Length: 128
Image 1 (cartoon, rainbow, N blue to C red):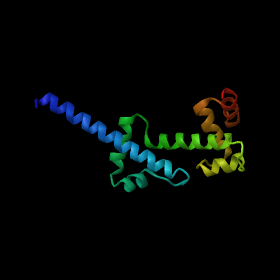
Image 2 (image 1 turned 45 degrees about the vertical axis):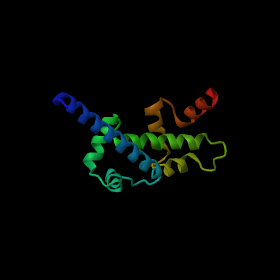
Image 3 (image 1 turned 120 degrees about the vertical axis):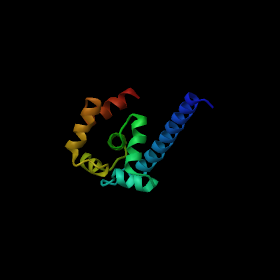
Image 4 (image 1 turned 180 degrees about the vertical axis):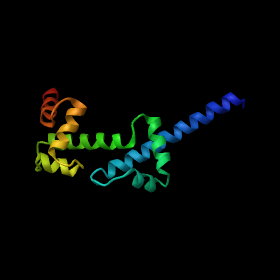
């Protein structure tokens, strides 16, 4: 194999590894989203890799690890709010998914979607 082809193969291998590692980390994070104290160090340790390797893998994916955690927690909180059979209030749902309080959840939702959680859930329900 020539030098340039070898470099391309090596890069593809690294990217493939990073994407596989990111997928494994995302599955692990999704299983532990309710733990408020979930840290990058815990995720890296569970995958038997360094925190630096974990961060590099997520860099290939384009979304930092903790941004992924915040996004998934917000999605789960909004799904709970949209559940017509929910028995928890907004503050309890916010706490369940790692938000400090309902205001924190509202700020995160406004920052991501430009709407309060209630407005977002109503808009999603009317679009369906």
